[in-house]
Amino acid sequence: QVQLVESGGGLVQPGGSLRLSCAASGSIVNINQMAWYRQAPGKSREMVARINYPGVTRYDESVEGRFTISRENGKNTVDLQMNKLKPEDTAIYYCNVWDAGVNRGYWGNGTLVTVSS
Image 1: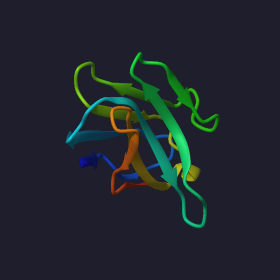
Image 2: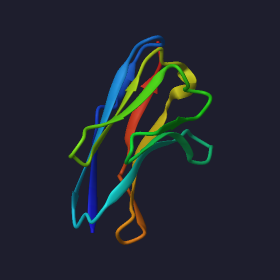
Image 3: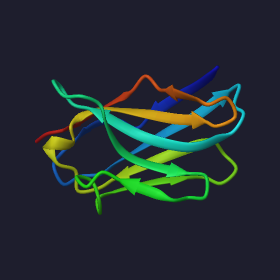
């Protein structure tokens, strides 16, 4: 099993910034993709940003230019720097990883981000 621990959520005013972090541990074989998803109240879960092993990133158009996903080389950690936050960014943010060694994905428990004045 792989465990994911997320941190960094909280309350922030519109226009502010937050940084989310996720650390994977346990029976890791070969994590080749790490991603952040979010789920707002009453909505389905959606992909926010993802990064694969070579470092190629992809973003949802709603966060392009405001959010940056990064992964530290040699470590199974992934961060999401969120700038210029908007009220519509309010959601529970989930870390997700794909272990290509066992062809299985894992989810964190989520961290709440609230953007409100």
